[in-house]
Image (tube, rainbow, N blue to C red; front, side, top):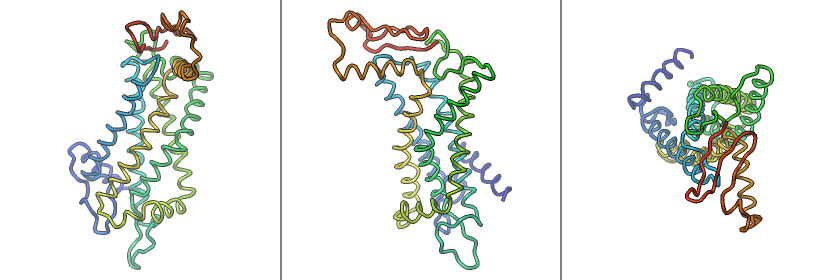
Length: 303
């Protein structure tokens, strides 16, 4: 088992660099392949498409908008974390589909070992990551940050805050926050993995016999397209936006929410000098001018 897994991992790295298929496009038994050329291209395009959702989100930040430097630091934490989670999901899917694991087909030949479809496990991993996983990550990240700050006296770990200059954010603060975020993400993955293992047979049966059974009549590439593109594109975009909301600077994020709430309820008086001349947000030592003449959208960083 172990040599086989290591061989698959090495092939995954090689195929990721040279875009060569690790295995034939379609197995003799018609199993879904996660690391072939078509799969890797699909996953790469999906990643770029999901990343574009965060670019769109930045342009909707109002009245306070992050500078590109601060935005890049925030988003890169998610990108690095997503890469680690993606590799984790691939290895988990391949490992759980090895012979002697739970069969999702229940129609194995009497002389053969049952083998699951890795796309089913990957589908389950994506669904869990983008639903309950977001809440678990929020709880774990808050707890780890609290412990590091209170008991280990670690500084500069307030998520989204990289120093006084928003155009020159602190790299040291970034790496501290990246380490805490990535560690919290891995803890979250192991928690979710434990939940999946506890209900493995029920979840896999429901996935293969109810949710994905209609894909059996279509080519392998179509199953990959649905499982690794159509479904994840909506869920991953939602996940990225939700996670971005709680890893960015919370003071200014809440200021945007309050402004939007008040604006939609027409609570701003047009005769108010602050509204005409600009809104200065000064909270917790953070001072940024927004909505000033000639600067429709302000840009901010954090201390």
